[in-house]
Length: 170
Image (cartoon, rainbow, N blue to C red):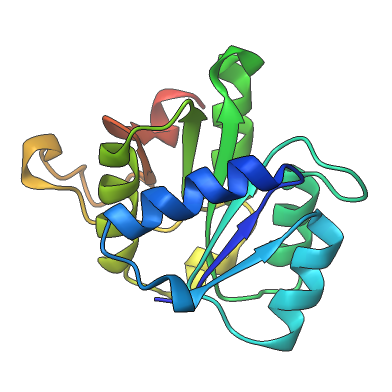
């Protein structure tokens, strides 16, 4: 799995890489970018399976990066890394914008394992690339809920410790 870690703080990038290594990721498959603009250049140059991006960065913040990725239909899963005190509305905004999950700092190694396991089970479909829909992530059995009726548009996204449904916030 090719992963791009985007954060303007090198210490945070190191922590994220340590978490990825604990989740079984080969660090030779992990690239780094210090800004959203650098990340965009990386994404245009070669394919990645997952972007883990900080929210607050110079040049292009995490949500702006996500918007460009979805606008350009770059096929990549996207996890937003943020400080928990930044507000509950941020999680919903990120999911609506097309993030696959939001991970709050400080991270635990279990957060990385859960996120990577979920992304590995990600089923890509054309609707996933739309700005108003998040990828459907396969839920671990401990979080499994009954399937929604066929006529609803339930969009579930992984959040550490469980899954958040956009239907709960819209």
